Length: 126
Image (cartoon, rainbow, N blue to C red; front, side):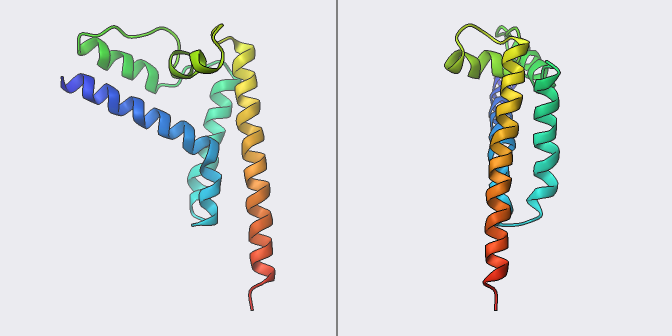
């Protein structure tokens, strides 16, 4: 039971990391120190996806599931949990490149908006 709970917690952490990598730039509007955490996170996601790598959390989760008496799964987190929702045909390297490009585009838009807002705030300070 402990292995399964740990695997489920790891799954949740994995998903939260993905959400943070995609949208974490917005946290810079609240506290600028988030930039130091977010840039490496989005860099890791883009590097991982553009090279067709599997996140190291995936084999760890699979190992925990096996230790809990469950079957692991083939492929990566995105392929197993997210791709079936978005791309039923499965994960290919081209799809991973597309995901990397989407992550980069989302973050370019977010950072553009953050920079715009910060500049406007600076101009309106007394």
